[in-house]
Image 1 (cartoon, helix red, strand yellow):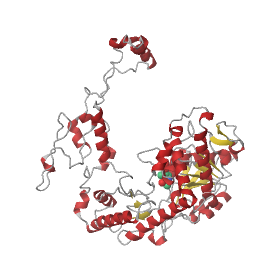
Image 2 (tube, helix red, strand yellow):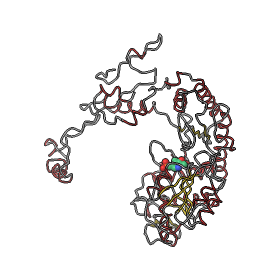
Image 3 (cartoon, helix red, strand yellow):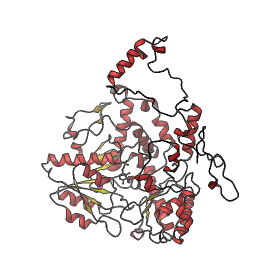
Image 4 (tube, helix red, strand yellow):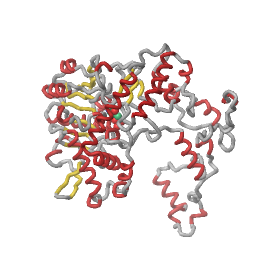
Length: 545
Ligand SMILES: *Cc1c(COP(=O)(O)O)cnc(C)c1O
């Protein structure tokens, strides 16, 4: 393959299939092939005319002061940058505006998203984001505010935070909420820091163990370790739940607390939660619940009734706001009465009709022992606005229906496919919001990855693979509540067909996907030796394919 001057790659003869030659552009009808921006742009082209930086020509130009752009300015910048001023061209590719727009639009057409089709990723709740959320989040009074603005100019924004806090506390049956954490994992850290502050205040800072069941999300042990605790595993039972007896047997004066994901990552509700909480409290510890799966129980179960002391809520999962590709997220943490004094700052308070941002360490009675701050400012305003819009537009009955429909859809998938795929916890009864299958029964040499790649050819984003770890070759499917029966039936038919090919050992499945812009990549090589810096077109052609 070579790259010619204007950037497109003439296709190689091997790309010809059957009697139909491949197009010389590499395009497949209106599905357009696209080179890297470095291949189509060059250092000479630009869509914008910039003055030459620091050139004598504009040093005295009309309307510019000498000191703005001239040699004096350059010298002052040099001083500020401590000798790090760039001396060579930056090497960015230049493109005209229409070329730039086309480049990114073409790339976006090779991407798959929740607005294109069904996105069955389990453990991540990729749900529809109603457009009303976006309309509200874009109101200038929410989108154009600055965190350092005087509070009397942002009363509406503070009221949104205050109202959302009220509904989160109401929906969870807890005492207070910290709004500032910026994702689920950040919320976990917030909860564990509050637990640590509470233990230290009681003179029990020597408790150094956090118990984490096998069925917990991977961020749980990572959080506990990051906060300086030693993590001990608690086994799962054969039916995919926490082994309550084993957990109780391990409690003692060295245990700071437990972190339990409920519903857990096997898609099951931890039925013994109340019993576990009582036992942990009796042993002097605290209960952290990973609430990322709140989508399955919102409106039906209040974590406060289960004896939980702290739980994060992923606004970007349960309350619909978009996420993916690393952000943005928002992970408010709700607290029990016992942990409320140690919750982080800041929080919003309504003082006689005025919304006030309480930022002082010596804050009111509720935050007397606050452990400090999680973030510089107040949290993710855009996510708050979307989540509150979602809550208010659904109402109490709507939120309950969301969780009921999410659970119904997951069970429909589980029961429609458990004759074809192995469902290890199928016999345990109904699942919650996600259905879990294993790779048991596939032909020798075939695994979950082949099913995932086959699904791509059928036009579906693959489900979550090889997680949770308690199941071999796990496939975790979360349909969410907004998928219609027709969409679920199409997905079920596709997954059934691909699974049957994997069971029959169809060799063409080993090289799927065949219809995607790129065939099967060497993912191990891509992960182990990622090529992140563009150098030269010739070696690049082999980099990822
Ligand atoms: C998504 C998720 C997390 C982590 O949340 P982030 O917002 O991605 O940091 C933690 N636990 C569970 C069960 C999750 O699904």
